[in-house]
Image (tube, rainbow, N blue to C red; front, side, top):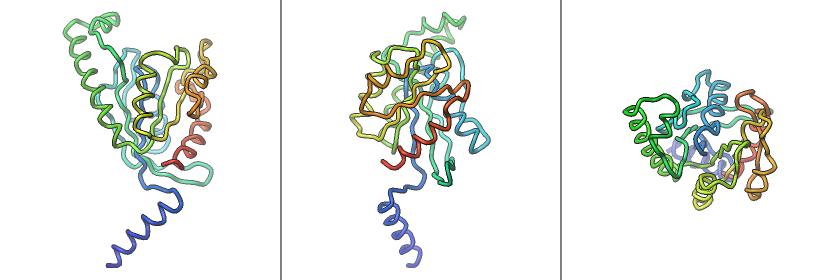
Length: 212
């Protein structure tokens, strides 16, 4: 009986103060935008282990990768997250695209099939997420069909969203263009490769958690 009362009290307190245990945080976006690179920084910082491998070849992540109970501390506050790094969303996957990276035809076809299955898995996982980090390449056109599809699917689920404009270390990067494309969401410019503005990301992440 005491255990039941304690459990009930905890749920009530969480609802009153906007705190939730183990927030399910999904990383979404197009291939090669830097989702896994950013997720790796977080997991390495707070668990000592990375969540997945990265590559210049598109669709390196072809299944949802999960890291449980990642406790993040920022300015004296702590939150626990369940991080899900999802495969890159694409509107079209052609095995011939992988041949450009000197992959053999059989391997390219296998990768294309797995990438397609990964996209389906990503969409299914969306329902289970409490909040979403959308990682976009700040050097690319934010109005692309893929980006509109990704953000549109998430908006339809009414999930709290934070948009990350990655690769600001590159000359072509333009964070303002992404802000203009998605004015309804907070946008934070970072470089996962150079670990630039990561503190700004954590600041925004804690703001995002208040919407969960």
